[in-house]
Image (cartoon, rainbow, N blue to C red; front, side, top):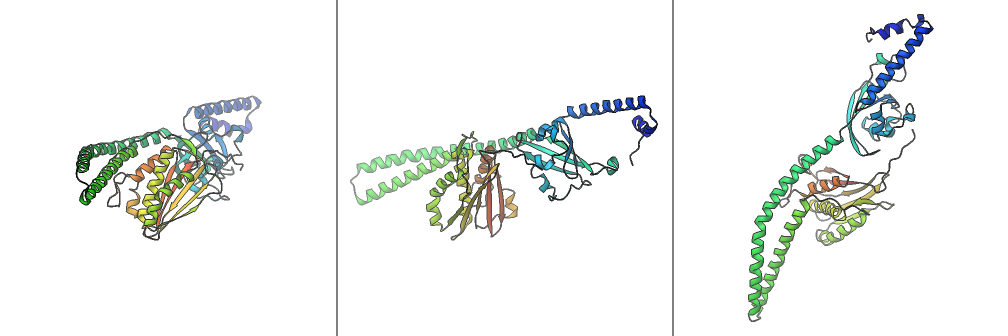
Length: 392
């Protein structure tokens, strides 16, 4: 039992013997101490909540109410699950069960309302002695806003990764650009000189070969140019669009290669129209990389299944292939630059996909099993995203 040796505890111990005047003074003193504690709690930047084992919020300071958009009138009736969706599941607490008030826990969560923010949540149970005789037991929930910390860390990591890649890309472009320019000039001279010769079968053959070389040089020049454009971060040009329509354009582009590889695509579209805010060209780039990886992972006869769905907040596109899968060792390296299991891969594709998805406020998830296949899930914020304040 806690030691009760404060002056207030001593007064409370003689409560039955207090007269009207002393009882009034005691009530006033309690009101002043409560007001002092309220002032202290409302000056701290962390959110402080007190919840029952059923998740009902009995107390919240100003910072806590602001973080989860809790109205003061809802205290005593609203549950923590209503304001932090998904928390109940992460605690492995079934709908008809209560919080284990004996266990402390910590979670990092993302809140989407009243604004997008990252919060570190601590839940600490009160000792049973502190609430002896009360039902139900309670726990303190501390909410620490780590949004800026998260953003700063991600920006620093992204800046370092992009800087190193740009440095390499600039060197590659410089080293390849000069020889390509020289090849173009000499091929033009060869083409001009061949035009001055008598048109024989041999001259026609050589002229055709020169044309092929020129096209290949142009293609290499385009690869370098697009490579630089792909890895250089660009602010998205957001517009309302249906991602399935963009995906259809990409699949049409890949149709011949899919046929050559003897691969098929199965689609299952959502019943409702899917609308997101996205940069069309960057969205195409995401689809190009994801589909390309899937094609290269599958053998003849493989199937790429594409499904889509949506809810009140997000639009989901899922790509499941029947390829060789990704090993456990390589799963952690998927988004790292220069990491590729392909002989001719540069290891930049998924890093670029991850960057574009984050710049669109989305996420990418990957599940894979060796010799079974890989599923890539793209999650985009819905254009009509809204938060439903559900009744308990």
